[in-house]
Amino acid sequence: MSVTLDSNQWNLVYNVFSFGLISMLACTVYTLVSQSRVLPKYRNALVMSSMVTFIAGYHYFRIFNSFDEASEGMVVNVSGEQGAFNEAYRYVDWLLTVPLLLVEVIAVLALAKEVSKSLIMRLVPASAAMIALGYPGEITSDKNTAILYGVLSTIPFLYILYVLFVELGKSLERQPAGVAETIGRLRLLLIATWGVYPISYILGMNGDPTASSFVGVQVGYTIADVLAKCVFGLTILKIARMKSHAEGMAADH
Amino acid sequence: MSVTLDSNQWNLVYNVFSFGLISMLACTVYTLVSQSRVLPKYRNALVMSSMVTFIAGYHYFRIFNSFDEASEGMVVNVSGEQGAFNEAYRYVDWLLTVPLLLVEVIAVLALAKEVSKSLIMRLVPASAAMIALGYPGEITSDKNTAILYGVLSTIPFLYILYVLFVELGKSLERQPAGVAETIGRLRLLLIATWGVYPISYILGMNGDPTASSFVGVQVGYTIADVLAKCVFGLTILKIARMKSHAEGMAADH
Image (cartoon, each protein chain N blue to C red):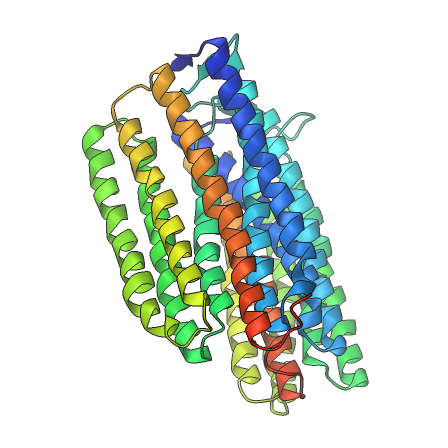
């Protein structure tokens, strides 16, 4: 099984992967060196953001090389065999980064220890289950199997939304001015970007990929990843700085 | 489509790319380790300068490898297909670094929060639009399309100049002695180096590249990039030090 791209399509995918790779790496360094700009209690949230973009940067490096090596005269091998374009890098990436992203949100809020622990103990397994259940549906060529795993994967997704919007909402009332709104925007960013993944999943269910569905899925995933990891991480830094200043850190730091 | 270089031309381009690569990396490390030489409020401007040269260093590494791999006996493949010299790395680079460079200027001025925010909210989208509109014109082989996108891309460019020269000018009056002149030189550096990009763009419009136009464009872009990113970043460091001393930091720091 293969996909034949024209030169504009091939270059678009190639350059979008390179863009994803360097965005992740630059964001990793930026959040690492910005630690002194927030109070110590918020630094762990920044380190987690660095880890998320570091892991994603590694995977974009692999995806970029995989795409180049699986292409021969712009015909991309998507057979799933050795030497084919390896879509599974994305699932390995998400399995690690999605739980970390959720822990990052809880860490930056600096909630009471029991509240944090309870949220993390539910969000982490739910997000791991969501990714793990999506994978068998992604690699199958049977449409019914894809639908079954798509539905199964949606259950923990809805549970995560419930925890973030209903349970976390209660904790936001005690946050300093401006923080609740920024967290609100962060949740919207999360919904908007996570929405791309099921759309790509459903697009991928319709049998063999066409050139335009392949390009759409790869570009869509990459933009969603940059928003959900880099822009997300920079928003976490912003929240950490707002909270640090509200708690007495000099505003010129 | 290909360009046949002689050995002097081929080596010049190859070595200029290597020069660009190491200039960017050295500047990245220099601005990162110089943070303690300025007051905390100016450190973010230095970190952004590091990010600009880090992202550019990554792209020069890719451009250098792409040029080598696309060359066979000093005949450079510029067909736009897989394995060709990938000019688009430059656009991905600029899409990330040009907005960051402008934010860097605003950050080092440490203006009132609302003024900074208003400038950034206009400069960042304008610069992203400028780069994004240039790209379709760069990759097209149709001259009219190239002219159309060249003109469209000039509109946000002129707007950026207006913001930097007219609006930012008002804020410079309250800066310490010497800073206003250095900012003035920084803006001239920006105009002089950004002027190289439209010249190269226009050179590239005249159909297939000749050996000398190819060499001219690559050498011109690289020198412009080193001036606009490394020399620019070192000037930002100088401004941050002048301001830090004016605000009481010991002059021997």
